[in-house]
Figure 1 (cartoon, protein in one colour):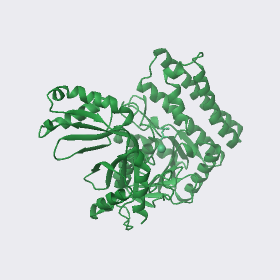
Figure 2 (cartoon, rainbow, N blue to C red):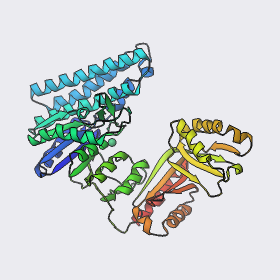
Figure 3 (cartoon, protein in one colour):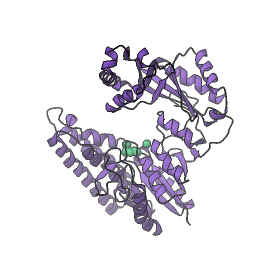
Figure 4 (cartoon, rainbow, N blue to C red):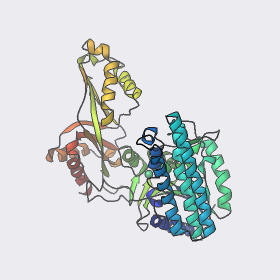
Length: 472
Ligand code: ASP
Ligand code: MG
């Protein structure tokens, strides 16, 4: 069987004429080594944000002329897509036809936004229709540019084969139906020697209503399509050299990891390294597909390869990340000892506010439960907890519910920790040497990561100190 490669381009990788030129060369190179190439693209950078903000009725109605923000958005979208077409597509028919198609999508944005303004409220379903326009424009643009470069390409919209539930803004695909449809739509194009260029991020319900897979979901689309075909490899083209040992804005010695295991990157994706949408991993692991992250702006760099085990390169700690702008919420009281159901009720209350807690700890004394929530949700969460435990608070079984000032969750990741005693010791010694006070600790039973809570002001010091443990 001929080998199949799925390549996904992120927003910055198709965000300008320069980026598009690079993307075309990357596609051309891929066709030399791969008989079948499928391209999945994000919207041009900034477009999804712009679309969603123009659909926000409160924003649209600010100022004397309530239509002005929408008109500005319309103009910006036209300018951005048309400028790229003007500089890259010399063939007039192709250029004008692509412009007409993109323009009609922009006009449908105007209709959608006006309808939303009349109702005064944007439903998740309406927002998905709006957000989908970015990818629907970028496939047409990219296909135009690729065809102009003499590579046969055809755009398609994944709404015709990625079938999801109706959970708008965070839809889940039905893999069985999606696989059948993906093959039915993409295989004939591939068999004809043409590169399908398809939308990331979006799908449709069985009834054909447009859904999105969640912000940053184009990576996930590539994995879904990769699994459906199935592809041999999925490559994610972005604007960094792959997965780094830490955020280079915090530590300038940060390096690209040539390899990282699925388990390790899962921890990293969760803990704020925005290299890969967390849902991307599961379909590729299940289908045994190779995954690679590479840089459109530095294509000769090998990037990062995802592996099932991670290479044993002697480094136990592979990466350090920080989630900032969090607060610790604590429920405290002696009366909680041995009382079943406190945690269930506490997290029920947290869930009722639509907040998710990235870190939870409870010591065996059972006198407090403590967890992190994004800072902006802390007041809502504590209020919900006070209401839930009103009786216990009155009876003094719970003394108080309170939240800290801003904190950061610093996480060290490395699958090797599982078999190496003393890693936690090293981590705490390093932080001690730097005078960083640790407010709370969590380690998952998978032992792939240790998370520490530190004061916001200590974030940089903590990350730098722990990064020192990697490069030693
Ligand atoms: N365009 C979408 C977003 O900005 C999806 C993606 O880029 O992955 O969230
Ligand atoms: Mg992304």
